[in-house]
Image (cartoon, rainbow, N blue to C red; front, side, top):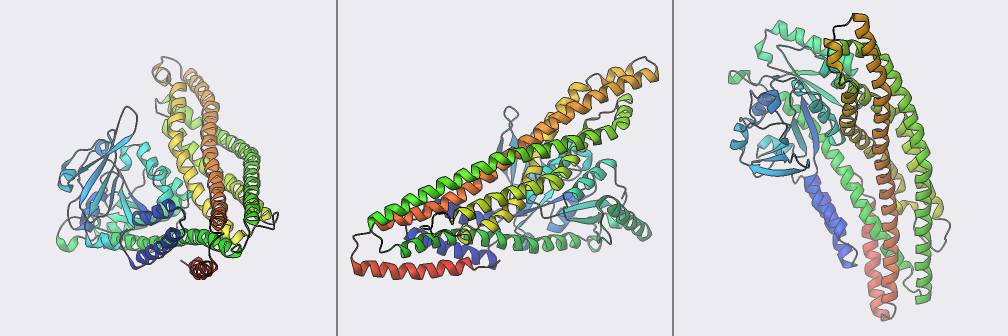
Length: 555
């Protein structure tokens, strides 16, 4: 991100805390990484639309130069991430077909524009442009997604890979053809389930008559209400080609500037949380050092033993809560199984008709699975996850009163803010992981079950017999798909829950380790001369005041 006033403020504050960490010989690796990560902060804004809507042309018009290729075929389109960079270049993430890993290949922008990238060989392209406007929205990464004609997998990637870090989606419609096709309607319904903010843009507005443009706006407004539940939505009109006076990319600039403002707020909240975390650990070290400055070696050893006891108790409580939560996961998966079975049964007649007509049912079934997984995660699992994290937090708080020799308090552990942050970040990650995982395994099950669909379609049998064969296939698909989906969703939930538990465990352990280090340092300096001890004590009190002042920092 650009070095804004906000960036410089938090960078300087973290540097100040880092200097105190170094002064007291506290571990530097984590805080150094946090300082470096400030430069990398960005939020994502995917630009979505049908193939040939004019998304790339609109971005080129906004930037004032043709950085992106146009007139590409759907199968040659890959996601292109555009953001500010001092050094102009393109970085292509090529896919190794043997193991699925990616490797970065850098090239000049002129070479990138003329390159024909294959979606099967390239995961995405990253484009860095030294542009005055992009410099003003340096925390925003605009993603030019392949058109909806490029296949369901690419639509799903727009959600699965970008949802956790996206502030909003920009949906484009051509003034020449504002109709919402079935695949985009499905995508919009899923965006609604995610509660994702959406902006709407009309492209090629000068290619139709004013009356036709008014009709286009009215139709999109009606569809936005139908598919997204958006009332009185603002719809802006853009135009990327034609006479200079006809070109208008200002609405896109305005949207990105608005997102930049929201992004800065998120950056400040993230930076404040990190700053308080390290200032809190510093305060733990200094408070322990000041409080026990006159303790004897045997008293310090007793405190060290108390720290070890507390850590063991907390780890045991966190582990017990994690074990108990396993039954909550099972209950949530049971609800998902029932919900998905009902949804597939409701669509069974439609699936039968598709099979009889020789249509591929994979995309339809995959979307049914995805939509029901999202609803179940939001309505059922999220509340269970919240109670689980709160239970761990309560266990930690209660344990603090068990050993009165310790002075580590709940405020220093930042448990309440940890709960909110954990819940906020975990659900999008779980949903994204589920979305990525569902396509492959579920698709494989569908492929195995309906492998003989062509036989049904071409069979020289009576219509009733074909219907019977199609019904048998659907009856076979529903339980097979349901169990595979439940397995995939369960696996991803458990992975993330383990990550949450490990994160809380690590945070608690780190703070207790900080107190242990303070005690160890005191024991080492026990024989220090009185004058040196008093000087050091005065410095620590001054530094503690600094740490506490930082802990009061508000975003």
